[in-house]
Image (cartoon, rainbow, N blue to C red):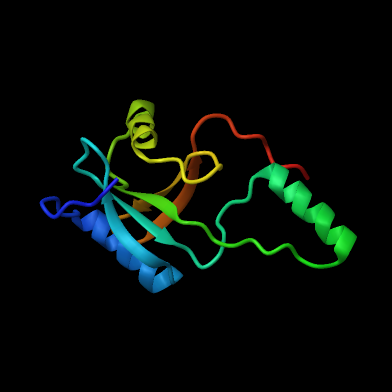
Length: 137
């Protein structure tokens, strides 16, 4: 994936990027345009890890109990899909976005859905591709 000079992010993408930077302290932010797409995604590095797979959670808790020390969880780059609340999306639209992003490392594909409201509020949801094992309590 690469960003191209001819494509310009829309106001929704710009607002989401500013929110990530100013309100959530994300770094290394950039607009990404996937192949055959005019919609900008945002890629960036959050201050802390956003998601830990349930299997990794169990292993981290076991190690913490055994050693008494927290297992450090370094943040990883995330893809953010900026959308406006008024937009209509279907599963095929989301599937196309997942198909367009590259799998970073060994983790499952995931995107952070950033929904912009008319009052400039941004709500974030983590979306995974496919089935995800539920968290153990």
